[in-house]
Length: 75
Image (tube, rainbow, N blue to C red):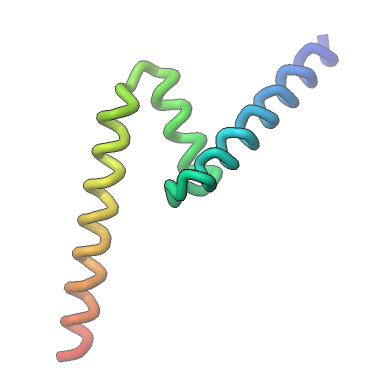
């Protein structure tokens, strides 16, 4: 039983390594933790396109806040 669990864990790691490499090749900007969260959300039935749209919106909002903070710091 321990061998099957170990084999399954190795398969999961290998899969995540491949997904992370694809993510890097596509310049998604996702780190391993973020990618893992996205995969789990998709496994739970979240629409991948909707998830992608949310991530893009969050990045835009984050960038906007950074720009505002820089402008405020200059004052």
